[in-house]
Length: 323
Image (cartoon, rainbow, N blue to C red):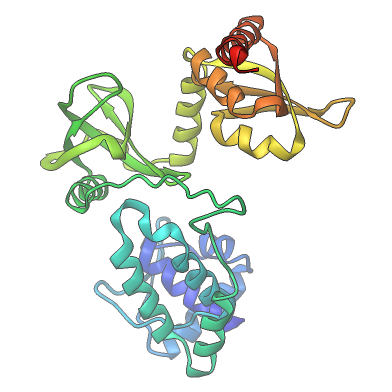
């Protein structure tokens, strides 16, 4: 346990620079006295930790210090190997880097842990290519050369020039300030600003990209989770349609796989589910509910019920002469 904590302490100092004993204690969830004892232990082991006195003091590593830290415990190794074995290798064009990292993780483990960790990771399967209904997920492809340019600009904090195809528009070149990358259900998005306005770009619609030398106009620190939630909320409030629907519980996932979001759910009196879901527009809602046939019933809005009834009537009229 202490060995793991010592490794974590060194990693904190390597990644975040000078930190006070109180900060280290909070991060490691131990007392300040324990941190001081750990610092002494590291110094005795030859790790060059030094103390800066004064109001803005703290502990830091000597500049340029690097060491091989192979203190992964069994569960940490399993977690990394499991993540690396899933479909996450497709995210942001980092597949080859992830494969190389997994080899290094395995190599870094003690011999006694290597076989057991690899075997344990094989017992977990994350996001397989098909589900129980034999449906293959739709994976969006982004050319490696394009993804590399986007990723470099995001990480370096440089402006980015993209050749982008928006819906129902011809491709155009745009210069943006990249903020970060998000992947949701195998779809990748670039969060950026353009002329100071928030923009979200689908990576699969980026035909080409070029990292520019100019620095991007963006804050030094970012909370991607908060930004993504805010943009999702704006997206859902812009021209979308909310539908109240009854659905057979066995088809719930089929409905939700086509909806943008689920807002509310409660059981109905006959065992079906009453859901409030959001679709992109009325046409999208009509198409999604039509796929479920008699396993779903639109309750509101009335215009959607009318559209589905008219479609069913047109189908019945088409086949009426065959009876």
